[in-house]
Image 1 (cartoon, rainbow, N blue to C red):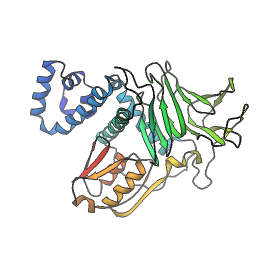
Image 2: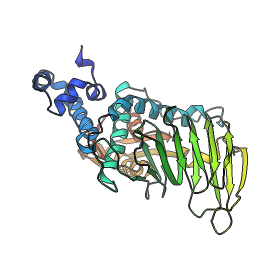
Image 3: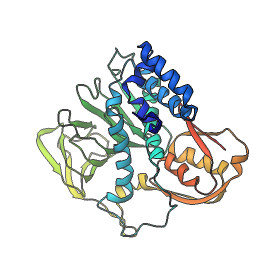
Amino acid sequence: MNFQDYEAIDFACDESFQRYCREEQEADITFWTEWASLHPEKTAALQEARQLVALLSARQGGRMEQLKHLQDGLTQYELLQQTLDNDLPVMEPARPRRVSRPVYRYAAMLGGVLLLAAGIYFFSRHPSATPAPGQMAAATIISAGDEPRKSVVLPDGSSLVLRKNSRVELAEGFNRSNRDLTLTGEAFFDVTQNIQLPFMVHTSAFDIKVLGTVFNVSAYTGHPLMEAALFRGKVEITTPQDPARKIVLQPNQKLTVIAPESGQIAVNPALKVVPLDADPVNHKAREIAWVRNRLEITNEPLSGIAGKLEKWYGIRITFGDEDVKQYRYSGTFESETVLKALDALQLSYPFNFKMVNDTIIISK
């Protein structure tokens, strides 16, 4: 086996490397220690792989089963971005000119790894109770807070983008005995398929059963109008007032639920299935305009751009080198991950960046 072709994700998924990180077998410890000393060019990848294994095991009460979903999670996140860029049924015929850049295998993998690791790191910092080995906490809460958008990869590999002041609460045993979560606010979902464990989204107005699809849900507490908009796949929606009635949405449709002015759901809420609302100018779905907002940069220093990226993606960015702050760039980004945005900027004036915990560090 040629380990020299491995990147961080490959090392993290290798069982021998996992045993080495956990110091379980002397033979694995000896092999990887010697291999690392013979291949110093792989130091960064090995270090990142060790951090990833640590996040998925020691820091998470032995949740090594997440490694089984890692590759699916990375692929699913890339599909989410492709969906936002190209595949939604309500789209403009021609996209505006954007910064062109190659899709490097390492950048794509690293982006997925960091997003997944950041999501799991968030879980480790915000549990409501200490989970038993191999189990999640009784109430795992993910919140966007004041960030305009927060991207998350869930333990089952599904991706979601939370809007400002929105949150999801994962049920106890998520991805083990169920895939249930409760949403307050608004979120855009791209769900991995698992027939044995249907994906369920609960809100105060309705419940959504998913087998694998792309959709947006707006369910703010006290708001008179709640919506579930479907872009790809199929969902089945029921209400607490009439659980026997099943409303099945097709792509390019949405369900609206109108509550009384008091904000409380009526005994028999007004339900309506209507087409998605397309913007007459750019022909894109208004329902996810909050996800698709564009970030435009015109001849700005990287120091200023970093501040915009922090607000745009809800992630901290620091500099390890003062000179790189003065590099100037121009470009337009729409539905990019922060890693891909930085990757695109590198094409003009090269720099390096890495993720340490929940912070991106930029240097020469």
